Image (cartoon, rainbow, N blue to C red):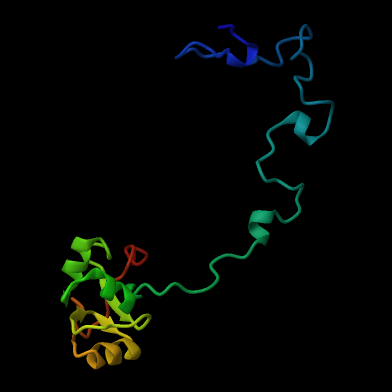
Length: 164
């Protein structure tokens, strides 16, 4: 096997010394030290994003637009065709989690895509009208599981109100 140039790499843990510029007129990095001649950037520090006094891009761009509802309740959708394929007679969030159909502790909403050919008992946090009608038409029953905070607002997500 021959070693090629593109296979070469430094030894593990090795560090290459940085280029020392501006140390006299001899050598590559002397005198102007790679900054060219004259001008603002040749002299002192210029902040990143500085645009010569023009209003910088990061200030021109608007921020804090829109609204994120901190009390939003996220449901995991479950369709009738998934219930039919699951083979379960009693559908609960725990049974669905055991089958890997919903996440742990997820709020489940049953939606009406697909058809049911057998009677099933479905316990979920929410139902669409079409899903509820299809389940009862197939001879099954529907039970709404109340959300853990009852009729109050859900707890705030994140801590955007923590410092108030």
